[in-house]
Image 1 (cartoon, rainbow, N blue to C red):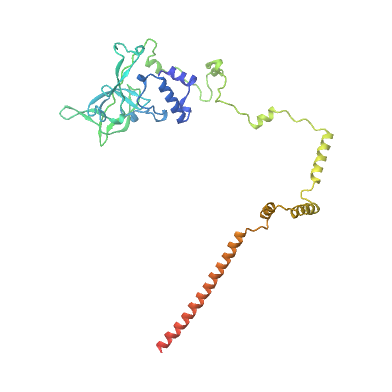
Image 2: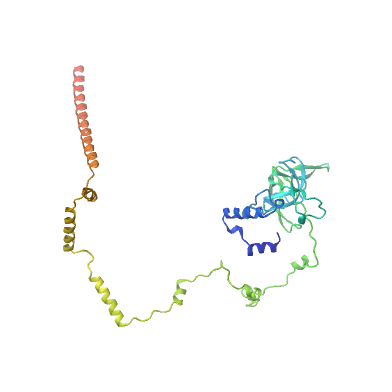
Length: 353
């Protein structure tokens, strides 16, 4: 996908990385159903955070000679053609394929049939890197590295970045070099490397800048200066106080009314008077004494604070009797053990005599 397509998909489309995993899965299924079967991937896409980024994670690069260890072509040697970053897999020159039907509008130059053999990507863990080992007599020998380790770095002029040394595990003196990337041809609009690296600006001070103050405003388009919805600005309490108008002064009549209302509120009793309590109690007692419905009387007795459940009273009584018996048995056992010990002592004295 080109950079323009990526920008348009995030700006005008849905940015799936901002959704939860279950919603992302739903959108992926909808996208898969909208594609023709020929372009549907057999492997599920990997989240952007879990995708391989560095050469150490991939282990291989386009142009590497590898040994296939799993699948139909296990034991055969092939070459890495491209990396499929969406699934963390690689395409090989000779690998398993599947029959797919391609509509005519998607035919490649030289294609003559609707049915083609589409290569299936392979996982890097199912591959072993093949390197060339030069022996002492000058002969070359092909080796397949079971495991690789990465130690040390060097500047690679072809990749234009620091690359790690790829060594064979347990034989770290053997280094398998990275393949050379395909050269990129410059077009008529390309800028030469020497011109790009030429320095044309030298700052005169670290405290003051030579750039004009309105430079940032001129760099941005005037129609895009509005803040976006996720760049919200919130008002603080002090800002809100400045926005609200000050309160108007209260007149003397209104102050007197407020004072009178406060005095009335303070004069009201916070607790009922004893006369009120006795009057309400007499009225309630008179009403309860005149109750004739047995069910209602039973209900009132149950909710009264002095009510005790007969079952609980019986249980408490039985518990008291049980505790009394336990106490009596303990006293009897104590007396019995004392008497037995006393007679046993007398008996032993007589035997000694």
